[in-house]
Length: 339
Image 1 (cartoon, one colour):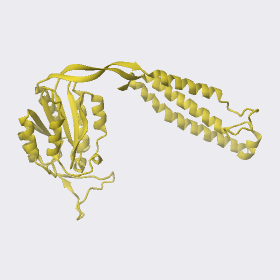
Image 2 (image 1 turned 90 degrees about the horizontal axis):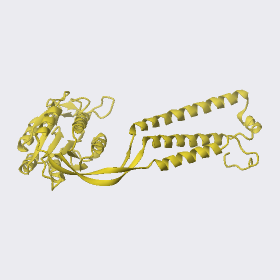
Image 3 (image 1 turned 30 degrees about the vertical axis):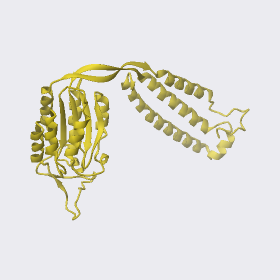
Image 4 (image 1 turned 135 degrees about the vertical axis):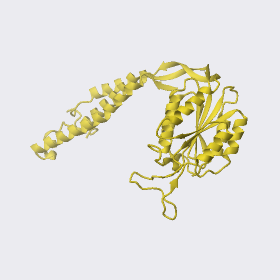
């Protein structure tokens, strides 16, 4: 397990692009200044010891050294001791619809972005719980196996987009069945499935799958994304919308009745997402009601400092920068390594 002890110092890496821009700018000023004195080719003959390649080399050596120093300051570490710890929590599998209809903007900024915001805020409330993530459209795939690593959960969540599942549709039943198989078999804590979808183009028997989950004691909670009145699906930033084969703009509508039927069969709640946080609060209350029990979690209890390698690299680059002269050595002038 790799981490940085002080990741906030990594923001200093933004200095590097600014340094590169400044270097390019100063080089251009230098070339303009030389042109004012005469033809650059003639001037090069008058200054045989000057080497522009050496200036470039020295800059990149310094550039690399600064990058290594910033990494050293951030404190790179590797986990060296993995332990199993007991925590009081619950297990939750999230099934997120990533079909194209989730790009509709009847919920701001759009259905999918709103769902990701809700899940990110929900994850912030977790302490000892386990979370897994499934994405689905025409097929369902496990994006993140159930874990207590919330940093990884947020990282995977931020990368979700409709292109992840090539087959379009809304395979809700397949997503629920996959979620049921994804829980830790030996855990006795309460388990729940959070299904976030607009329910459109529903293809399989999701109600039957939710009922099967309820029989196993797994509640299926539904968050409906969108407006029952419908909304077009944008395909670019120029206000162009998805159209059918006849050239008509496709209108996607929240299938609220179907979502309610799934929630009822799964003994869970149904809440419709809007531009407020009402659906998020409903989920939080439902999770608070769940019975927490001991969960086994694998965590790194000790970390080894790994800054030494980066420190040596920084030192070597600085020494190389110091040893590289701005001008050609008169003795080795005929050697064309830097010309």
